[in-house]
Image (cartoon, rainbow, N blue to C red; front, side):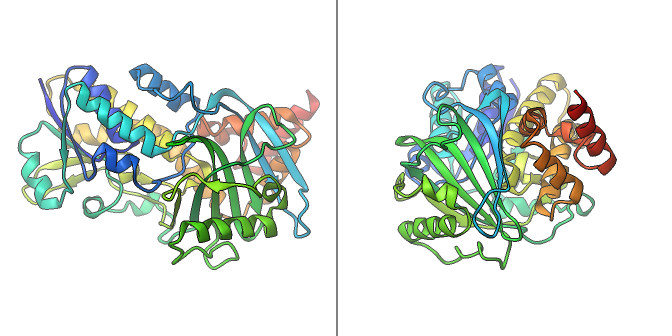
Length: 411
């Protein structure tokens, strides 16, 4: 039985641990918090998992909250004008529904399941020195904790990281009491509201510790009118500012948010980080090697909602690579090849996310505008959130975009 150590108890680390456990590996997970501490703590992220990522969870039999979580059947885009109107406003239908489960719920539940199934959990904040010691006792060590000292082991890949500073300020509030969008009251949809020159508000139906909820997520251009959450510690003040910005910039969303309340005292989060791709293999002081997982090595801005999806796809790719390796060593060549397998899905995500962080070129504005008149365009754009590689064929090149729109209009 091969022994594997996973440092970090997030989407990728625990999905991978549960997958390896089901295949007979001896797995140890190191987490800096217990399941109860995770469940009772502050929200850790936004997330919206699309069809492919949800299928990975079903394959492992760990989709415990699927029947209780709102089914997201569409994804819509609205663009705000200075007068508060919506010159662009549409929703595309997803081929397979998406869902969003608060990571406090999912990670606490998965951690408990891992232990119940015989997995070894070590609750301990890991330093580089600790990792150097533990690495000698395992066949493979993977770091899946995207924050803290261990991330510094993995060097920045400058060729794949065009930004060296945060491109958005981030502010999240989990709320109860959001009314449905009157345009589609009978089905749930993620809404991407764009405020040109300022940022975006993303609204995500979700499930949290107290049941169904919604996530109000501001992405503000640094230094702009939405970049106002630094230093805000009081959750009630955070929500007040969130609603004030909605009333000022996106009144149609404010109209349905007038009576919302925070889900709990830990239901807000704010911060910022620079998008980055890091080298996947790190060398410890003793010469041992460790493999980076998910956002340790590919951390994109959450504007496209790909963090949890990429984490799930990374765990699935690494699981296959580990099983296929059999009894052969997990050396540097294997680690590089395992990351290359993940990069086949992560590269399109990174390209697309970085493109959306900049001002949209004219042909992209044309695509977004045309989606309001051509449902096929809206649906294709929405389903790209599940498979971002599809954007390669029509999104980036003006001629390809024009040819695509002409073909749809002609049909």
